[in-house]
Length: 232
Image (cartoon, rainbow, N blue to C red; front, side, top):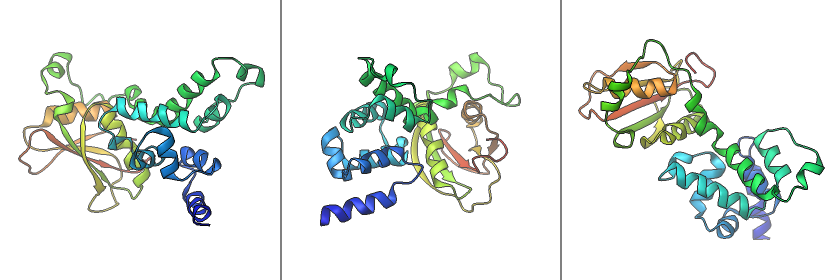
């Protein structure tokens, strides 16, 4: 009875934004059971299901955890494509002996698509950083980034934080801004950090603004606005 109640609660919490959670609940597994099968911690399973990839120590670890989880759930090629929102091919194609490899690749792409999409973002012409100047900047992994929810959409805020971590920055905190009235996503930099602020803003394709104060020239603040608002 306790197991059934646990699954019932899990089913209610498996929202449309959590395809991996739906796949797990469909197999009647609790988070702990799925974690044991995948040789992951329960926290890591929840991070994957909630899209909080910034919680992993590195993008490589996030990708490895995704592969392990998809394999543990035995997600086949057809289901992986459905979870990824991709066209589902004919059954004859699914019979290919490489289908399991394709399944792992497809589900990995599904979960990490938002993380890697930032590489295709168009930069603003007002935020130009020359190749020579960029090479002289400190490495991204030496830069701390605080990501704040400025629109009330924590799911989108977490996805943006995951994109920032995928660019090798250190996301040190994800939380709530002072209000939810920010109309667009912007990078804010303290005195002495304009160059690294412009670099991150260019990578994300968003505006950049100075902060009135701050003592750490290697700490940026990213306030996330609405997903479809100006600048997103």
